[in-house]
Image (tube, rainbow, N blue to C red):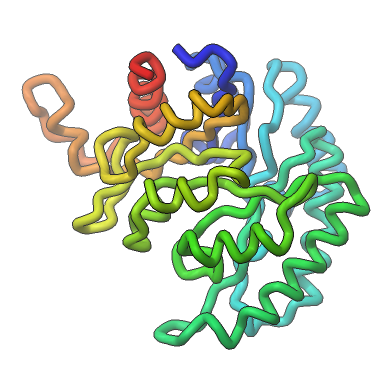
Amino acid sequence: MWDKIKLSGFADEIDMDLDVQMNVLKKLGMSYVEMRGVDGKGLVEHTTEEAKEIKRRLDSNGIKLSSVGSPIGKIKIADEFAPHMELFRHTVELAHVMETPNIRMFSFFMPENSSYEPYKNKVMDQLGQFVDYAKANEVILLHENEKDIYGDMADRCLEIMKEFYGDHFKAVFDFANFVQCKQDTMEAYEMLKPYISYIHIKDALWADASVVPAGMGDGNVEKILGNLKESGYQGFLSLEPHLSDFAGFSALEQHGEQKKKMSGEEAFTMAHDALIKILERI
């Protein structure tokens, strides 16, 4: 087992209710959450006072945030930026309340069927405003490679990292998102490994882009995690199951009994157990 690794996850995939999230996390022996949605809305939609109450409840259950799973940067590049910058400032305030330096974020959705190149300068300008504010307020922005944003493919992620990487801007590596973009994950890993500070654990199939448990897809999850272990990586592995409609679930049930849809707890537990099996092998 990889002893120094820290497991986290998007517990809103278990349930939006915080008490349910915490109960399942504790059942799985996890003490971190990447908080995206909680008690009926996104964490960043909560007021500062509401966030303080969420933090109090987390503290009483021994659970900390690995990161704010924010939607920052998940707007169209043509959208008005000023209101989003205001949301970012609030997100930074909530990160301080939740006592995590980490904020997961993105690099703006690009127009469909269009070259990304004409938008590069605007992307870099807006990301730069985020980074300057992050530096001034002592938070760390974690850029996730997401389908259809500027930094979806490894070469553009590398552009962004060369521009902004430092104490306040680092890379998330998401296996499934690269597969869904038809990006070879080994190639992406080799390009981005100096910048990777956070890992999202989900896998996907090259053929149809469907998300599957870690190790069952084409993301080279076990090989890359093995490489990360050898390189001394000691950060978070954050479960993002996306498995509630996983077609292979019935085949994993005893006697192949059909189960129409997994519960959030079942999906999250399946994702957790798949990762643990990989960690036991590497």
